[in-house]
Length: 343
Image (cartoon, rainbow, N blue to C red; front, side):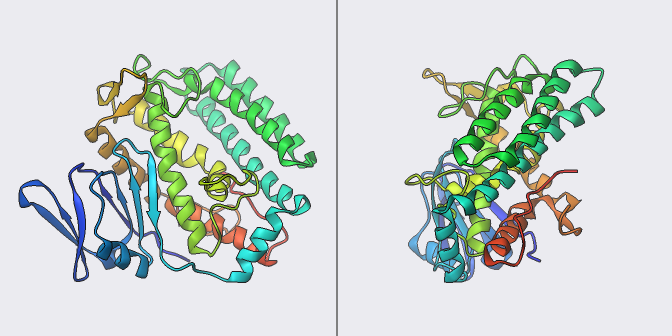
């Protein structure tokens, strides 16, 4: 089993990354710099405009260290990868199945079953843990709707039908999401899911965390030898990592939604850390982004018993484990792709 590695987050806007021997050097203004050994790192994520030297890019690619560039506001810019890894026969099977409805619909069903089931679990946990603070009737109604949706998904014959059910379930789920915000409601209200740009603090927080999760899923898929751009639920679109988006669907409620709610409800972040631009978009400041990244890393270290493997793993390895299970199914080692069901 893969071990959960260290991730270096570079958030200083003026920082530039270079290579010195076996170390990554983070150069800042006025000659200040920080050195870290490459062998301790699994991934480097830069929220800067300055970038990195070609030598460091090459070293990361050679050592299979992920190197991802995001804007200071968390929008994806690009990733540096080395030689394509994995079995070419596995990728050929992925490409073939992505064109055959009888093959890709069952996989798409599994992704969606995992997502909706885990969204239900978020609502049910809120009812169980905070019955005196939440609108139990609204949350119970939403959970019941999604339960019925789960029964209909196995009968779907096309991804068009599946996306219809996905859209309905998401509308219901996000329609009651505001009831899960128990504190700081003036600063972190939620009316609807919006992005590009996010128009309120909660959506800005969710979008930032979803970007981190998308990157984790893309990296996990590449690690097991799959192409993150050839999906089964999300169809092909130039520049879109469709399979990474597929994989993250079942993990969104567990890794992102619950964390976002915890950050707000436990008052680990506050409304002062967000600014609304003249265009209406909301930005997160540096201190808040750092607090969110620390919480993200701590969440990834927490452990759970994987429902399919029956092994204890950290939450941060969920993308890798699910990518591995998908690869095993495509190779013919499993009878079906087992989605992650949060217990």
